[in-house]
Amino acid sequence: MGFLSARADRARISASARAAQRARELRASGLSIIELAQGEPDFNTPEHVIEAAYRAMQAGQTHYTPVDGTPELKAAIVAKFQRENGLACKPENVSASAGGKQVLYNALMATVEAGDEVLIPAPSWVAYADITHFAEGKPVWIATRPGHGFKLQPDELERAITPRAKWLMLNSPSNPTGAVYSEKELRALVPVLERHPSLWIISDDMYEHVLFDGRPFATLAAVAPQLAARTLTVNGCSKTFAMTGWRLGYACGPVELIRAMARMQGQSSLNPSSVSQAAAVAALNGPMDIVHKRCAEFQARRDFIVPRLDAIPGLGCDSPHGAFYVYVSCAGWIGKRTPKGAVIENDADVTAHLLECGVAVPNGAGYGLSPYFRVSFASSMQNLEEACRRIAAAGEKLH
Ligand SMILES: Cc1ncc(COP(=O)(O)O)c(C=O)c1O
Image 1 (tube, protein in one colour):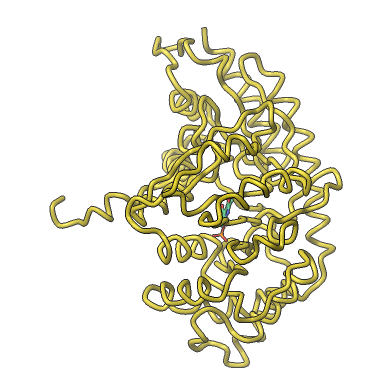
Image 2 (cartoon, protein in one colour; image 1 turned 45 degrees about the vertical axis):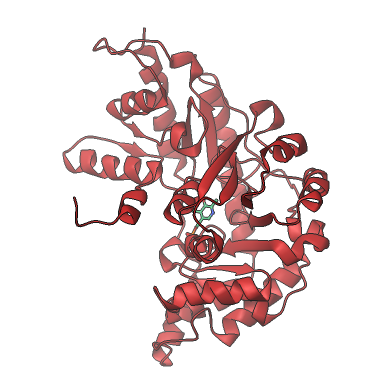
């Protein structure tokens, strides 16, 4: 439509949102669909967080706040980064937004000029490329290999860097693969990053607390403090505290960048919800035992689902080390025919066939590496068991 801007054209609906939407439509028409597409914990927000929000509302915390966070929230964020990550930061280094997604949006909108390159290890969360497009930048996918646990290797990074490269996106634990970078693996990237001082780094630590088998968490700015002056460390309440609907993300970075991000926010949404900020203070300053218990539950679900998916002929997956996704190769289904005679040509055809068989999942193309699909195991064991049964049955229908 001529009325809409080219910018509106560049804003796309993500593969996972599309799959979830399709699942809702089919369900509304009476079909039984198991939806393993959305990236959110199926648990409720902890009770003490909800109570803190309630108290804040009653105490009149229902007004505008400073654009990028109340002093109380900034203090809680500073304390979190110091306590959990060993990052030396001050209130002027941190900012809060309506979700980690808005943090990333602010950062790219504040820094990316038309044609600037954003390096994105593939597969990655779809939003990195989508926001880059939106900011008129150029996403540069760097393919990682399953043999390397889908983790970026120093030589692969070196080869991808050009004079236009502005940002590198690092995400650990990763959406969609569950890959986790150890301190040693991050350290291996540091000499390359030191050789290219104009490249800045976003460390997306959103799944920090969904980490399995007792693995320690590592983040770049702590591993290499010499890079902190050009690293934005992003985190949020969504995944850790099951607070996706509250919309509260935050970041720590160099003052000038943080100020520019606040200006972006000041001309769009202003402050994140005052009530959500009060809730986040309680979450960040509160006990972590419920978070650890839920992580153990995610690990049990992983251990249930991964061997079952991997045993299905034509599919293959490794056990993720964190987050709540498994990235399943469907290479063995490509070239087969559905009962209606259609040839499965790519992973979009695979997920369309799975949907017909009652399971909604996003295909790998949107994440930058095919042929795969992503399964979220943030769902009940009962759902996971039935989904595995349906996916196996879907495979048996192909010939
Ligand atoms: C890797 C990653 N980073 C950031 C986010 C943003 O989460 P939110 O905007 O809910 O804070 C998500 C959400 O799916 C994610 O998967």
